[in-house]
Length: 205
Image 1 (cartoon, one colour):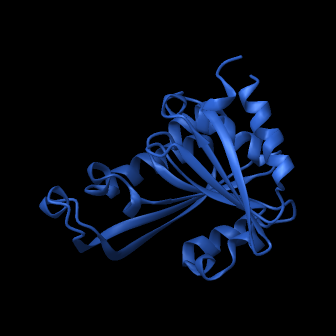
Image 2: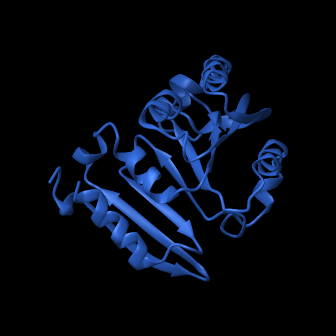
Image 3: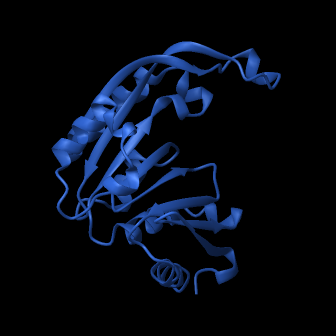
C-alpha cells in the first residue's frame, strides 16, 4: 500500500439537492507529485473536463506578470491541440506589493486573464497535468455526457457561465490549488458511497 488510509479521507454533506464532498489529505500526501492528477482522473470517470484558470487568483509572483504566463500557456495548448478560450479582463485584484507584506487587504486595478480549456478524458495524462496545471490554481468542471464543449467555452469566455448554477450545468465541479491539502467537490450526481469507493481505490494503490 502506497500510503495509509488515515492520510486521506472524505466528509460528505448535503446542500439542498447538491452533495458536497470534502476530500482532505495529509500535508505529506499533498507533496506527492501525482496525487491531484489521480483524484481528478478518477472523478472524471471517463468524462471530459473544462479547466477554468483565473490569473487573479495566482500567487503574487505569477500575478505580477500574467501575460507572460498566458503566452507560455498558449504555446503548450497549441502543442496539445486543445480547444480553449482566453479573455483579457481589467478588474480589481489583490495588491502583490507592500500592502500584502503588512497583512493589508489592499487591491488595485490590473489586467487579468481567464483561460478555459477543454480536455477530453482520453487526452488527460500525468504529462499534460504537469505541463498545464501543476503549480497553479484552477477550477475543474466535469462535463455531462451530452454537453457541447464549444458552447460551454463561449459561456466561460463571455463570463455568462458565472450567472448559471454550476451543479446544474456540470456533472461535478471543484477548485484545486497546490497550496491546499483539500478538494471540495460539488455535484448532484456523485453520491456519498460513490465518493467513498473512489477514496478507497486511491488509497489502495
